[in-house]
Amino acid sequence: MLSDIEIAQAAKMQPITEIAAKLGLQGEDVIPYGHYKAKLNHLLAKADKPEGKLVLVTAISPTPAGEGKTTTSVGLADAMNALGKKTMLCLREPSLGPVFGIKGGAAGGGYAQVVPMEDINLHFTGDIHAIGAANNLLAAMIDNSIQQGNPLNIDPRRITWKRCMDMNDRQLRFIVDGLGGKVNGTPREDGFDITVASEVMAVFCLATDLNDLKERLSRIVCAYTYDGQPVTASQIGAAGAMTALLKDALDPNLVQTLENNPAIIHGGPFANIAHGCNSLQATETAMRLSDYTVTEAGFAADLGAEKFLDIKCRAAGFHPDAVVIVATVRALKYHGGVPKAELNSENLEALEKGLPNLLQHVDNVKNVYGLPCVVAINAFPTDTKAELDLVESKCRELGVNVRLSEVWAKGGEGGLALAEEVVRLCDEPNHFQFVYDVNDSIEDKLNAIATKVYHADGVVIAASAKKQLKQLTELGFDKLPICMAKTQFSFSDDASKLGAPRGFKITVRDLKVNAGAGFLVAKTGDIMTMPGLPKVPSAEKIDVDENGKITGLF
Image (cartoon, rainbow, N blue to C red; front, side, top):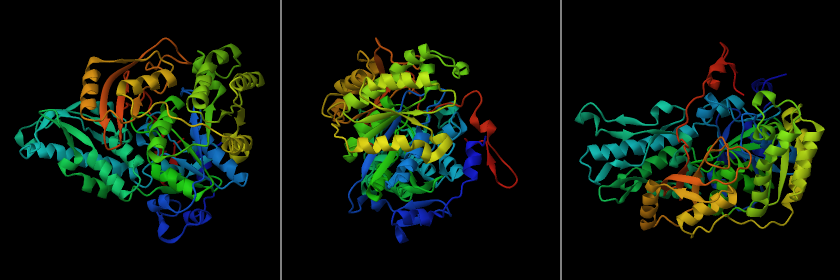
């Protein structure tokens, strides 16, 4: 059996100009980056064309067994094109942290991949590096302002802006810098986030054009003065230069699937601090250029889909037409208590115990958000008929159909049944609504997400977060949407509570404003914005030979 990277390296790619031509694009609208990558003029998002239908792909709470959300997204887009539906795929860019950490890559798998796979998983077109440079420019200018007499009266103890890098490195979470005497700056506590968890990433993903990008960057609150007033990137004088660094990155990236269908990959990997989806520019561009856009949101539906719907759709005015919820029988058995090593054996008891995780995601999408949805079971050879029948019968009780997805093994052909159901759902009436009114109080919005989406008994706001809540309200930031930072492995803020736990509360330990992005970040549990590498990082398996052929990416 060929590995993912071997399948990708054997692909017969078409020149990117030919892929663009399928969309009716040529000339200055297409900016080639080599033979098989290009950027598209971001102004295409404002083209005078009707918007196509929008399909969101999300998933159950992730497990070590894997769910295959990106693989399903790619295969679904190929299948819809095979049905004669003009469809574009719209994905987020992989981050080097997960690529070299646990995931080993994020471009789909098997015969449902986007290519060139190695480029996409590594530096790609440099967007994430540009985001890191813009972030760190502001960090440098904050400390320089303090060094040069501190005209803004910044309190070094209340600098909220962290440096960043696109790599998992726990050593940099909490550091002390500026040591070694006056010439080296003002000593203070500092730290790094991974680039994709930075506010610049969120700003980048939600900006509608260059002017909006600059305005959002200007509004970033990066520190507070000694008397508690916010200091912005505009006051630091950094917004213009940050925009210059991001100018080219703002153009969405065009690549192709293994079946030579167009795909946009641009922005936004994380579903915790960013919003877990590709950029608004990318989604809007795809919707202007196609009849159907298939996009995905990061992590599970309680994180990625919640942010996509409550933050991105609210900001952009998007109204999704259908939702796909990806699950595997293996992952559901894991939620039912089966160890990873024993998932290949039929276990209906464990499956039934783990099914509430899927059913809660389905119920949320259908009844909380009012959107039509289908469950896609990403097929494994070890799945038995009895297991598949059990999943199907439980979903039918909620009025939702189940379709087997075999896109990993068969590409678009393996997703035709799923594609037909998605097309059908797109023509169904839906009653899309948000989880909360943005004008509600911060506490009410937190409770709405916790009770309606997580099925918690409410929130507990830690003493330090209560002070932050009071200050944010006084500063006029209380009418912003909420971006919840919570473990992706559970509906609760405890990663060990699998399935669909009950009888818990969500503890909010930190609240901060991302004024540029336009939301408040609520950190819960022990969530980290700078992950660490696992015991055996994927990087140990990645190599390159004397001819430049890369191995180990998957």
